[in-house]
Length: 257
Image 1 (spheres, rainbow, N blue to C red):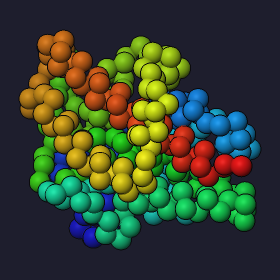
Image 2 (image 1 turned 180 degrees about the vertical axis):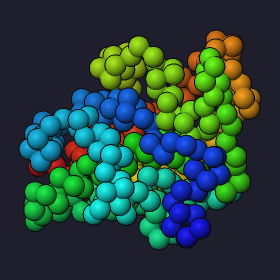
Image 3 (image 1 turned 120 degrees about the vertical axis):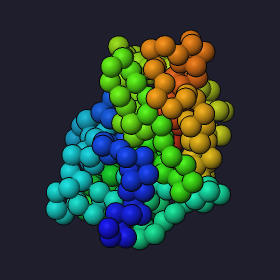
Image 4 (image 1 turned 180 degrees about the horizontal axis):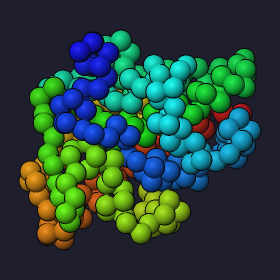
């Protein structure tokens, strides 16, 4: 197996995943929809100008185009991987946190760029920030994932977290999530958004390890006690909200007057 596949898809290889789409459509849509509610008027106008549609419309663009030239190289950007000390592994640049920072740096100079370059980097950034916060897109050299059953369906570690927004919020739309779950104060959001995507990646490497303690191997979700289900829901919500707030922060900074 070549180095690219070993490095970038470490999480998938370790966990036996069958689905490489972080958060699934609902999760990425939630992140982008909530982020848009936190944009400044200037940033919202600029994003709409370059994308021609909402952030949520393009939330999963990177998944759909990942295997199509000339975007096939981005297939290796969806994961972040960490060693036993939670240090990010960035061989060949195949790291969601690193690539999110790269897109951010490119977009900071948007006034000198062609519209097509801005559009592409926006589509990449809004997805990479989401993948950076998806538990199944943080791979570890010292950890192995667990499976869980939801009814009769078995979810491997990767597909579990990709599907987790639907599992914990089966009847909730992105707007419902914004109205019911987005309750952080301005002070709390400011604290969450300190740093760069690579700083957040290291933080996520520490915090996502919590996901391994939330349930036993091959647990039946429907049979879990209410407090354990609530812990899983809070874990999912926390990561979705962090991604949304941080995406909004980056876009607001890029398009600041």
